[in-house]
Image (cartoon, rainbow, N blue to C red; front, side, top):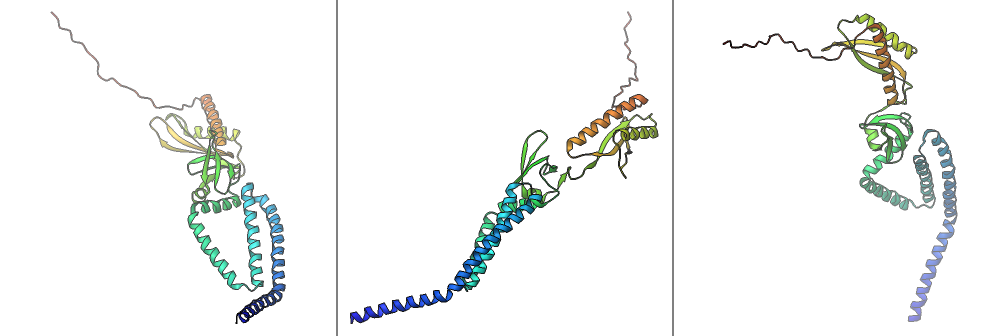
Length: 293
């Protein structure tokens, strides 16, 4: 009786092995094809990565972002090959399970790293924006300076006082920023005032002529002077003219040059730039009464 049970057990194991061998033999072509497809997609990912690296090299100056973008593209291509290989093996159930697990894991990671992922994707967006490049002079989030670095987490700005400011990428995407470098020329403003006794038309013509000689205007550009108000001690105006500007310092230099030139021109013509003064008028005379003996 015992020998009979052992023989049945051996026969059952052998039948199982035969069934597995049949399955392996029948599935071997698909298995080899799946491996071949997966290897092909690995090579495709490699060459696609090189192509996109050359493309990104023209538009993305930051190496870390370019390398990360290439790695993401290569990983996507490899995953496509992996899913196609699973389909060739008729592992639809496994494929569905993998996709479901990936979705759950991705959701959990997304919730845990919400801020970090926001900055990462914002960094990828910023790397493709022509409005913001390394070396540009920008104003954003209350800071102004030259963009020194754009990475997957933040941008680094070097201010005019030589200090560095690190701003998260999400803040740059969400908040407006002003880029001085993207426009070759900008309008500069200078405020001034002249005395009430001045000939305003002569002041206007002289000021415009002085600025035009220093800052030649192009095309439709022009020097504009508009009187704004009757001040306490002067009639005030705003002067506007165009010049080459790539950073905030260029504006300060242009304003400095314009103010010096205007002062010299006014001094030569005897035009007064008044400053607030206070006049004290004593209307009553002081008298000392002396008692006579």
